Amino acid sequence: MESKNKNELPIIYSCSGCSNVAQLANDIAVKINEEEIAEMSCIAGVGGKVKPLVKKAKSGRPIIVIDGCPLNCAKACLNNVDVEPDKHIVLTDYNLKKKFNSKLRLEDEEELYNKIVEETKMIYPLTEEV
Image (cartoon, rainbow, N blue to C red; front, side, top):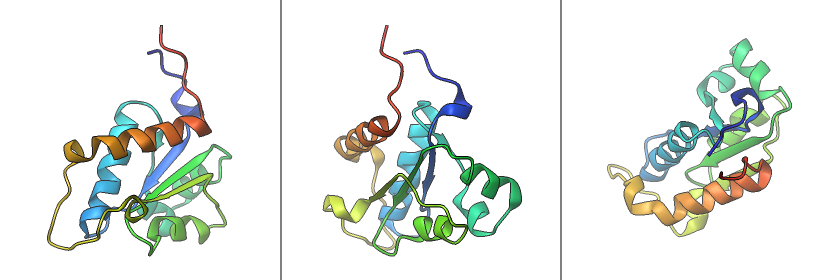
């Protein structure tokens, strides 16, 4: 598949907190970034109001946020700089239970990953496969 210009891809942010679903959110965003479906950026930098990262968040590119749980920390970081995501995904809405001292493996959540990729592609369709 031919990728589009990285500066045109949606921006994806994820929670990366201390629970199993938070870490899975981060794992999903990292894989989406690696596959050039979206460009991952730093939500901690946005929350910390680091100027270049806030500027990127306000660039007008489509934004996807993956939060692990209903606390919606990643979305709140964006809201604090007056940015509203185009798509907000909360992993506990997919029947995952939030647990501490536990890890979910991305390999075990391939179906969920594929659903999130499809939702991302609905915001910004990729070039057709050759």
